[in-house]
Image (cartoon, rainbow, N blue to C red; front, side):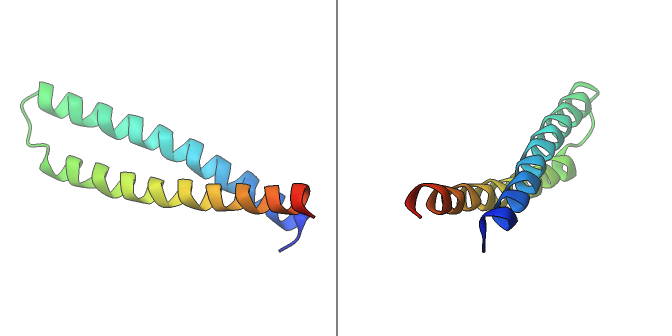
Length: 76
């Protein structure tokens, strides 16, 4: 993978991580609203856990791309 491709993928990965953070915040707010209104939150919590796992994968992918970029720019 070259520099241009890595930069493109990294840009996309960073947007995914930012979007994922927004989704996590929104889902946590949904859970708070449900709890406050006395509703069952099990499904919402399970979905939050799914989102957190997906976010962890996005963050790991972004981190790998950042390391790759470092290698391409600094070590080459």
